[in-house]
Amino acid sequence: MVDRVYNFSAGPCTLPLPVLQEAQAEFVNFKDKGMSIIEMSHRSPEYDAVHQDARAKALSLWNAPDEFDVLFIQGGATEQFAMVPMNLLGEGHKGAYVHTGHWAKNSIIDAQTVGDIYTAWTGESDNFMRMPSPDEIKLQADTRYLHITSNETIGGVRYTKFPDLGVPLVADMSSEMLARPIPWNLFDIVYGGAQKNLGPAGVGIVFVRKSILETTNRDMPRYLRYDIHQAKESMFNTCPVFAIYMVGKVLNWMQDEGGLTEMEARAAQRSKVVYDAIENSGGFYHSPVDRTSRSHMNVVFTLPSDELQARFLAESATRNLSGLKGHRSVGGCRASIYNAMPLAGVEALAELMAEFAAKNG
Ligand SMILES: *Cc1c(COP(=O)(O)O)cnc(C)c1O
Image (cartoon, rainbow, N blue to C red; front, side, top):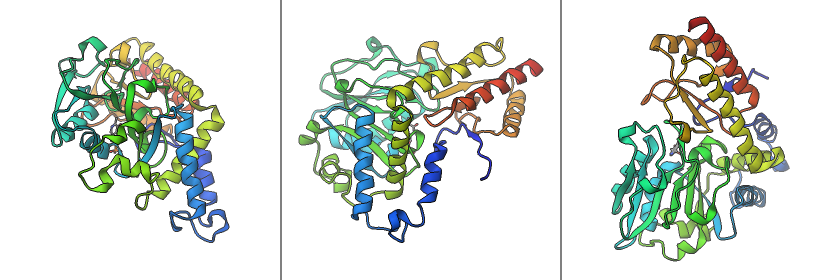
Protein backbone atom coordinates (compact mmCIF):
# COMPACT_ATOMS: atom_id res chain seq x y z
CA MET A 1 0.00 0.00 0.00
CA VAL A 2 1.47 3.38 -0.95
CA ASP A 3 1.48 6.08 1.67
CA ARG A 4 -1.63 8.22 1.71
CA VAL A 5 -1.32 11.94 2.35
CA TYR A 6 -3.76 14.15 4.21
CA ASN A 7 -5.44 15.68 1.20
CA PHE A 8 -6.79 19.19 1.84
CA SER A 9 -7.73 19.75 -1.78
CA ALA A 10 -10.96 21.65 -2.41
CA GLY A 11 -12.25 19.23 -4.98
CA PRO A 12 -11.96 16.59 -6.16
CA CYS A 13 -11.33 15.85 -2.55
CA THR A 14 -10.22 13.16 -0.17
CA LEU A 15 -12.50 10.13 0.11
CA PRO A 16 -12.67 7.53 2.87
CA LEU A 17 -9.90 4.96 2.49
CA PRO A 18 -12.21 1.97 3.19
CA VAL A 19 -14.40 3.12 0.31
CA LEU A 20 -11.47 3.22 -2.09
CA GLN A 21 -10.25 -0.16 -0.94
CA GLU A 22 -13.66 -1.74 -1.28
CA ALA A 23 -14.04 -0.38 -4.81
CA GLN A 24 -10.57 -1.64 -5.66
CA ALA A 25 -11.28 -5.10 -4.31
CA GLU A 26 -14.46 -5.57 -6.32
CA PHE A 27 -13.48 -3.59 -9.39
CA VAL A 28 -12.36 -6.18 -11.92
CA ASN A 29 -15.07 -8.72 -11.23
CA PHE A 30 -18.18 -7.08 -9.80
CA LYS A 31 -20.60 -9.43 -8.01
CA ASP A 32 -19.11 -12.41 -9.84
CA LYS A 33 -20.35 -11.20 -13.20
CA GLY A 34 -16.90 -11.46 -14.79
CA MET A 35 -16.84 -7.76 -15.55
CA SER A 36 -16.49 -4.45 -13.73
CA ILE A 37 -19.41 -2.22 -12.90
CA ILE A 38 -18.33 0.30 -15.53
CA GLU A 39 -18.59 -2.35 -18.24
CA MET A 40 -22.04 -3.70 -17.49
CA SER A 41 -25.40 -2.40 -18.57
CA HIS A 42 -26.81 0.41 -16.51
CA ARG A 43 -30.09 -1.53 -16.80
CA SER A 44 -28.63 -4.68 -15.23
CA PRO A 45 -30.03 -5.83 -11.90
CA GLU A 46 -26.56 -5.50 -10.34
CA TYR A 47 -26.21 -1.85 -11.29
CA ASP A 48 -29.84 -1.12 -10.54
CA ALA A 49 -29.38 -2.24 -6.95
CA VAL A 50 -26.42 0.14 -6.61
CA HIS A 51 -28.41 2.98 -8.20
CA GLN A 52 -31.50 2.59 -6.05
CA ASP A 53 -29.43 2.24 -2.88
CA ALA A 54 -27.56 5.48 -3.67
CA ARG A 55 -30.86 7.32 -4.29
CA ALA A 56 -32.47 6.04 -1.14
CA LYS A 57 -29.44 6.71 1.06
CA ALA A 58 -28.94 10.23 -0.27
CA LEU A 59 -32.50 11.11 0.72
CA SER A 60 -32.57 9.30 4.05
CA LEU A 61 -29.13 10.33 5.30
CA TRP A 62 -29.91 13.98 4.70
CA ASN A 63 -33.34 13.57 6.29
CA ALA A 64 -35.07 14.79 3.15
CA PRO A 65 -38.86 14.60 3.61
CA ASP A 66 -41.13 12.63 1.24
CA GLU A 67 -41.82 15.80 -0.74
CA PHE A 68 -38.31 15.55 -2.19
CA ASP A 69 -36.62 13.35 -4.72
CA VAL A 70 -32.96 13.15 -5.62
CA LEU A 71 -31.61 13.28 -9.18
CA PHE A 72 -28.21 12.29 -10.51
CA ILE A 73 -27.33 14.48 -13.47
CA GLN A 74 -24.06 14.74 -15.36
CA GLY A 75 -22.42 18.14 -15.69
CA GLY A 76 -21.73 18.93 -12.06
CA ALA A 77 -22.90 21.99 -10.19
CA THR A 78 -22.07 24.13 -13.20
CA GLU A 79 -24.75 22.40 -15.23
CA GLN A 80 -27.24 23.37 -12.53
CA PHE A 81 -26.32 27.04 -12.90
CA ALA A 82 -28.17 26.76 -16.22
CA MET A 83 -30.78 24.12 -15.43
CA VAL A 84 -32.21 25.97 -12.43
CA PRO A 85 -33.34 29.07 -14.34
CA MET A 86 -34.20 27.04 -17.47
CA ASN A 87 -36.62 24.90 -15.51
CA LEU A 88 -37.95 27.36 -12.95
CA LEU A 89 -38.27 30.73 -14.63
CA GLY A 90 -41.54 31.04 -16.50
CA GLU A 91 -43.22 34.04 -18.09
CA GLY A 92 -43.08 37.03 -15.71
CA HIS A 93 -40.87 35.23 -13.17
CA LYS A 94 -37.65 36.55 -11.79
CA GLY A 95 -34.76 34.78 -10.13
CA ALA A 96 -33.04 36.51 -7.21
CA TYR A 97 -29.35 35.82 -6.65
CA VAL A 98 -27.17 36.49 -3.65
CA HIS A 99 -23.65 37.33 -4.77
CA THR A 100 -21.32 35.99 -2.12
CA GLY A 101 -18.17 35.21 -4.10
CA HIS A 102 -16.67 33.09 -6.83
CA TRP A 103 -19.33 30.41 -7.16
CA ALA A 104 -22.31 32.73 -6.72
CA LYS A 105 -20.82 34.87 -9.48
CA ASN A 106 -20.66 31.88 -11.78
CA SER A 107 -24.27 30.98 -11.09
CA ILE A 108 -25.26 34.55 -11.96
CA ILE A 109 -23.23 34.63 -15.17
CA ASP A 110 -25.03 31.55 -16.49
CA ALA A 111 -28.51 32.40 -15.22
CA GLN A 112 -28.31 35.80 -16.92
CA THR A 113 -28.19 34.12 -20.29
CA VAL A 114 -31.38 32.20 -19.57
CA GLY A 115 -33.90 34.38 -17.79
CA ASP A 116 -34.78 37.52 -15.92
CA ILE A 117 -32.58 37.52 -12.85
CA TYR A 118 -31.23 40.14 -10.48
CA THR A 119 -28.71 40.43 -7.67
CA ALA A 120 -30.55 40.71 -4.37
CA TRP A 121 -27.39 41.34 -2.35
CA THR A 122 -23.71 41.55 -3.10
CA GLY A 123 -20.76 41.18 -0.76
CA GLU A 124 -18.42 42.89 -3.21
CA SER A 125 -17.76 45.99 -1.09
CA ASP A 126 -16.89 43.75 1.87
CA ASN A 127 -14.54 41.65 -0.23
CA PHE A 128 -16.93 38.70 0.21
CA MET A 129 -15.84 38.14 3.79
CA ARG A 130 -19.34 37.39 5.09
CA MET A 131 -22.82 36.20 4.24
CA PRO A 132 -25.74 38.69 4.39
CA SER A 133 -28.27 38.80 7.17
CA PRO A 134 -31.82 38.18 5.90
CA ASP A 135 -32.85 41.84 6.12
CA GLU A 136 -30.03 42.85 3.77
CA ILE A 137 -31.41 40.73 0.94
CA LYS A 138 -33.68 42.87 -1.23
CA LEU A 139 -36.33 40.94 -3.10
CA GLN A 140 -38.39 42.27 -5.99
CA ALA A 141 -41.97 41.41 -6.91
CA ASP A 142 -42.60 38.20 -8.91
CA THR A 143 -39.49 36.48 -7.59
CA ARG A 144 -39.80 32.75 -8.23
CA TYR A 145 -36.79 31.72 -6.15
CA LEU A 146 -33.86 33.05 -4.16
CA HIS A 147 -30.57 31.45 -5.17
CA ILE A 148 -27.87 31.16 -2.55
CA THR A 149 -24.45 29.53 -2.35
CA SER A 150 -24.58 27.98 1.08
CA ASN A 151 -20.82 27.69 1.41
CA GLU A 152 -18.40 29.61 -0.79
CA THR A 153 -15.71 27.02 -1.30
CA ILE A 154 -13.06 29.53 -2.34
CA GLY A 155 -13.83 32.40 0.02
CA GLY A 156 -14.45 30.10 2.99
CA VAL A 157 -17.74 31.70 4.06
CA ARG A 158 -20.99 29.96 4.89
CA TYR A 159 -24.48 30.79 6.06
CA THR A 160 -24.85 29.81 9.68
CA LYS A 161 -28.59 30.21 9.20
CA PHE A 162 -30.52 30.06 5.93
CA PRO A 163 -32.55 33.15 4.95
CA ASP A 164 -36.30 32.66 5.36
CA LEU A 165 -37.87 35.41 3.29
CA GLY A 166 -41.03 33.72 2.14
CA VAL A 167 -39.56 32.90 -1.28
CA PRO A 168 -38.39 29.33 -2.01
CA LEU A 169 -34.65 28.87 -1.75
CA VAL A 170 -32.51 27.24 -4.39
CA ALA A 171 -29.10 26.43 -2.98
CA ASP A 172 -25.78 25.48 -4.44
CA MET A 173 -24.50 23.33 -1.59
CA SER A 174 -21.64 21.67 -3.47
CA SER A 175 -19.17 21.94 -0.63
CA GLU A 176 -21.63 21.19 2.17
CA MET A 177 -23.76 18.39 0.80
CA LEU A 178 -24.71 16.00 3.59
CA ALA A 179 -22.43 17.84 5.96
CA ARG A 180 -25.09 19.78 7.89
CA PRO A 181 -28.82 19.47 8.48
CA ILE A 182 -31.01 21.87 6.52
CA PRO A 183 -34.56 23.18 7.00
CA TRP A 184 -36.08 21.45 3.98
CA ASN A 185 -39.31 23.43 4.19
CA LEU A 186 -37.45 26.52 2.93
CA PHE A 187 -36.05 24.86 -0.19
CA ASP A 188 -37.29 23.96 -3.66
CA ILE A 189 -33.92 22.76 -4.93
CA VAL A 190 -30.59 21.88 -3.36
CA TYR A 191 -27.77 20.88 -5.67
CA GLY A 192 -24.05 20.28 -5.89
CA GLY A 193 -21.27 18.42 -7.62
CA ALA A 194 -20.42 15.13 -5.91
CA GLN A 195 -16.69 15.67 -5.84
CA LYS A 196 -16.58 17.97 -2.82
CA ASN A 197 -17.92 15.68 -0.19
CA LEU A 198 -19.54 12.63 -1.67
CA GLY A 199 -17.55 10.97 -4.39
CA PRO A 200 -15.60 11.47 -7.60
CA ALA A 201 -16.37 14.10 -10.22
CA GLY A 202 -18.85 13.20 -12.92
CA VAL A 203 -22.23 13.61 -11.33
CA GLY A 204 -24.31 16.46 -10.03
CA ILE A 205 -26.73 15.68 -7.23
CA VAL A 206 -30.00 17.58 -7.23
CA PHE A 207 -32.59 17.40 -4.47
CA VAL A 208 -35.86 18.66 -5.84
CA ARG A 209 -39.28 19.34 -4.36
CA LYS A 210 -41.48 17.03 -6.41
CA SER A 211 -44.50 19.34 -6.53
CA ILE A 212 -42.63 22.00 -8.52
CA LEU A 213 -42.12 19.53 -11.36
CA GLU A 214 -45.75 20.02 -12.35
CA THR A 215 -44.96 23.53 -13.52
CA THR A 216 -41.31 23.45 -14.58
CA ASN A 217 -40.59 24.33 -18.20
CA ARG A 218 -40.90 21.59 -20.76
CA ASP A 219 -40.09 23.33 -24.01
CA MET A 220 -36.44 22.39 -24.16
CA PRO A 221 -34.17 19.40 -24.85
CA ARG A 222 -35.15 16.56 -22.58
CA TYR A 223 -31.86 16.09 -20.80
CA LEU A 224 -32.24 19.59 -19.36
CA ARG A 225 -35.65 18.87 -17.81
CA TYR A 226 -35.91 18.00 -14.13
CA ASP A 227 -39.29 16.35 -14.62
CA ILE A 228 -37.78 13.86 -17.09
CA HIS A 229 -34.90 12.94 -14.81
CA GLN A 230 -37.32 12.48 -11.94
CA ALA A 231 -39.79 10.37 -13.91
CA LYS A 232 -36.94 8.13 -15.13
CA GLU A 233 -35.32 7.84 -11.69
CA SER A 234 -32.12 9.39 -13.08
CA MET A 235 -31.86 6.78 -15.82
CA PHE A 236 -33.13 8.76 -18.76
CA ASN A 237 -29.93 8.01 -20.62
CA THR A 238 -26.74 6.18 -19.64
CA CYS A 239 -26.11 7.59 -16.23
CA PRO A 240 -22.59 8.16 -14.85
CA VAL A 241 -22.48 4.71 -13.31
CA PHE A 242 -19.03 4.85 -11.77
CA ALA A 243 -19.61 8.18 -10.06
CA ILE A 244 -22.99 7.08 -8.70
CA TYR A 245 -21.52 3.77 -7.53
CA MET A 246 -18.80 5.62 -5.61
CA VAL A 247 -21.30 8.09 -4.15
CA GLY A 248 -23.34 5.13 -2.92
CA LYS A 249 -20.29 3.70 -1.19
CA VAL A 250 -19.48 7.02 0.46
CA LEU A 251 -23.09 7.30 1.67
CA ASN A 252 -22.91 3.82 3.17
CA TRP A 253 -19.65 4.76 4.84
CA MET A 254 -21.34 7.89 6.24
CA GLN A 255 -24.15 5.78 7.62
CA ASP A 256 -21.71 3.38 9.29
CA GLU A 257 -19.86 6.32 10.82
CA GLY A 258 -22.98 7.74 12.46
CA GLY A 259 -24.72 9.69 9.71
CA LEU A 260 -25.44 13.38 9.38
CA THR A 261 -25.27 14.29 13.07
CA GLU A 262 -21.82 12.80 13.31
CA MET A 263 -20.64 14.45 10.06
CA GLU A 264 -21.81 17.85 11.27
CA ALA A 265 -20.17 17.43 14.66
CA ARG A 266 -16.90 16.29 13.09
CA ALA A 267 -16.88 19.25 10.70
CA ALA A 268 -17.35 21.66 13.60
CA GLN A 269 -14.57 19.96 15.54
CA ARG A 270 -12.12 19.81 12.62
CA SER A 271 -12.64 23.40 11.58
CA LYS A 272 -12.28 24.57 15.19
CA VAL A 273 -8.85 22.94 15.37
CA VAL A 274 -7.70 25.02 12.40
CA TYR A 275 -9.40 28.26 13.48
CA ASP A 276 -7.87 27.82 16.92
CA ALA A 277 -4.45 27.38 15.33
CA ILE A 278 -5.00 30.68 13.51
CA GLU A 279 -6.15 32.47 16.63
CA ASN A 280 -3.45 31.11 18.90
CA SER A 281 -0.70 32.27 16.55
CA GLY A 282 -0.54 35.83 17.89
CA GLY A 283 -1.50 37.27 14.51
CA PHE A 284 0.99 35.24 12.46
CA TYR A 285 -1.90 33.60 10.61
CA HIS A 286 -4.90 35.65 9.66
CA SER A 287 -8.41 34.64 8.70
CA PRO A 288 -9.97 37.11 6.24
CA VAL A 289 -13.42 35.75 7.00
CA ASP A 290 -15.91 37.42 9.31
CA ARG A 291 -16.34 35.35 12.46
CA THR A 292 -20.08 35.02 11.93
CA SER A 293 -19.66 33.37 8.52
CA ARG A 294 -16.75 31.00 9.01
CA SER A 295 -16.97 27.91 6.87
CA HIS A 296 -16.72 24.51 8.48
CA MET A 297 -15.50 22.96 5.25
CA ASN A 298 -12.97 25.39 3.79
CA VAL A 299 -10.73 27.28 6.19
CA VAL A 300 -8.91 30.16 4.49
CA PHE A 301 -5.89 31.84 6.09
CA THR A 302 -2.97 34.04 5.17
CA LEU A 303 0.64 34.34 6.37
CA PRO A 304 2.63 37.56 6.88
CA SER A 305 4.35 37.41 3.46
CA ASP A 306 4.36 35.53 0.17
CA GLU A 307 7.81 34.25 0.98
CA LEU A 308 6.70 32.75 4.30
CA GLN A 309 3.65 31.29 2.63
CA ALA A 310 5.78 29.57 0.00
CA ARG A 311 7.99 28.08 2.71
CA PHE A 312 4.97 27.00 4.74
CA LEU A 313 3.53 25.20 1.74
CA ALA A 314 6.86 23.55 0.97
CA GLU A 315 7.14 22.38 4.56
CA SER A 316 3.58 21.06 4.58
CA ALA A 317 4.43 18.84 1.64
CA THR A 318 7.30 17.23 3.54
CA ARG A 319 4.78 16.24 6.23
CA ASN A 320 2.37 14.61 3.83
CA LEU A 321 -0.07 17.51 4.00
CA SER A 322 -1.28 18.18 0.48
CA GLY A 323 -3.46 20.73 -1.30
CA LEU A 324 -3.15 23.67 1.11
CA LYS A 325 -2.52 26.37 -1.46
CA GLY A 326 -5.43 28.78 -1.72
CA HIS A 327 -7.37 29.32 -4.93
CA ARG A 328 -5.47 31.40 -7.48
CA SER A 329 -8.17 34.08 -7.41
CA VAL A 330 -7.79 34.91 -3.71
CA GLY A 331 -4.31 33.61 -2.76
CA GLY A 332 -3.39 32.60 0.77
CA CYS A 333 -3.83 29.09 2.10
CA ARG A 334 -6.93 26.99 2.33
CA ALA A 335 -7.60 23.78 4.19
CA SER A 336 -10.59 21.97 2.73
CA ILE A 337 -11.79 19.55 5.34
CA TYR A 338 -14.70 17.57 4.01
CA ASN A 339 -16.48 14.62 5.57
CA ALA A 340 -13.72 12.10 4.92
CA MET A 341 -10.91 14.16 6.47
CA PRO A 342 -9.90 12.51 9.74
CA LEU A 343 -9.35 14.61 12.85
CA ALA A 344 -5.71 13.48 12.79
CA GLY A 345 -5.31 15.37 9.51
CA VAL A 346 -6.24 18.74 10.96
CA GLU A 347 -4.26 18.01 14.11
CA ALA A 348 -1.18 17.42 11.97
CA LEU A 349 -1.89 20.69 10.19
CA ALA A 350 -2.33 22.60 13.47
CA GLU A 351 0.93 21.18 14.75
CA LEU A 352 2.77 22.36 11.67
CA MET A 353 1.11 25.79 11.93
CA ALA A 354 2.21 26.20 15.56
CA GLU A 355 5.79 25.07 14.92
CA PHE A 356 6.13 27.19 11.80
CA ALA A 357 4.81 30.30 13.55
CA ALA A 358 7.10 29.76 16.54
CA LYS A 359 10.14 29.51 14.24
CA ASN A 360 9.24 32.38 11.94
CA GLY A 361 7.03 34.71 13.94
C1 LIG B 1 -16.86 23.24 -6.98
C2 LIG B 1 -18.06 24.08 -6.91
C3 LIG B 1 -18.86 24.31 -8.04
C4 LIG B 1 -18.52 23.73 -9.39
O1 LIG B 1 -18.78 22.38 -9.39
P1 LIG B 1 -18.66 21.49 -10.73
O2 LIG B 1 -19.24 20.20 -10.29
O3 LIG B 1 -17.19 21.42 -11.04
O4 LIG B 1 -19.42 22.15 -11.79
C5 LIG B 1 -19.98 25.07 -7.89
N1 LIG B 1 -20.32 25.61 -6.70
C6 LIG B 1 -19.59 25.41 -5.59
C7 LIG B 1 -20.02 26.01 -4.30
C8 LIG B 1 -18.43 24.64 -5.66
O5 LIG B 1 -17.70 24.44 -4.56
